[in-house]
Image (cartoon, rainbow, N blue to C red; front, side, top):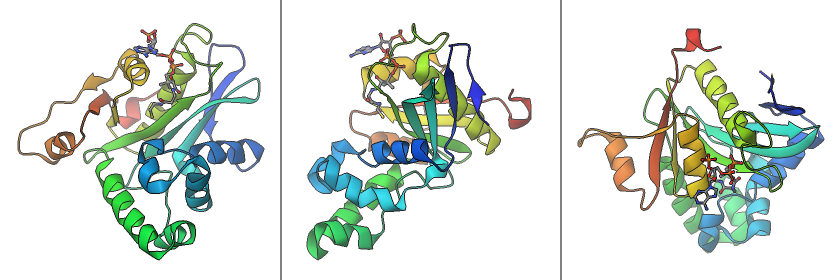
Length: 213
Ligand SMILES: CC(C)(COP(=O)(O)OP(=O)(O)OC[C@H]1O[C@@H](n2cnc3c(N)ncnc32)[C@H](O)[C@@H]1OP(=O)(O)O)[C@@H](O)C(=O)NCCC(=O)NCCS
């Protein structure tokens, strides 16, 4: 499922074992910077996450063979990061490690889509590749999201959900067709939204799997 776009040299697709895959996993393993108080700095997060990462939850964008960005998806309850309690203890010792594992697991449990959906866990377009104009029609970020829509659809999802408080990410998602989620008062999604702080939940409706190009 590798897709070439109109922009010259831009290719987006799943990771295959090799140097590019390792580069993406190294980048993505420093994610969750918002939880630095619990997980530590970028080097500590890399040490914690890198071993157990699930490459099949990531898509990469390259321009002329160079990494331009990546996106991670969560589906069937599993995202790109899968640290074990042992990883936490190895990196942070027993006390802090077990506490960190419990807090991280709780936070992870709420970053999910409603049943029937896939969750856009993270997106990162590397500096120098950002902006829609250099890589028309949608930019590297838009191309990654389009590929994620195809991937989610191929997994049977009819929605791609995400939470963000980043204005550029929000603008990108809206440009790609996302709309703010509204949910019934007594629903699991409303509970997730009520516990999301200043993050906004957005959703891209996907065509039925059999009609996706
Ligand atoms: C979020 C991100 C993927 C968007 O990449 P991109 O598609 O190349 O898009 P841009 O950075 O050009 O911005 C997208 C849109 O947001 C707008 N924008 C950029 N910075 C903005 C800001 N600080 N406030 C408001 N709007 C902003 C741009 O004008 C553009 O608008 P348009 O769609 O109407 O043209 C990229 O900025 C990124 O990787 N950031 C670092 C990682 C990150 O924060 N990821 C999101 C959280 S997981």
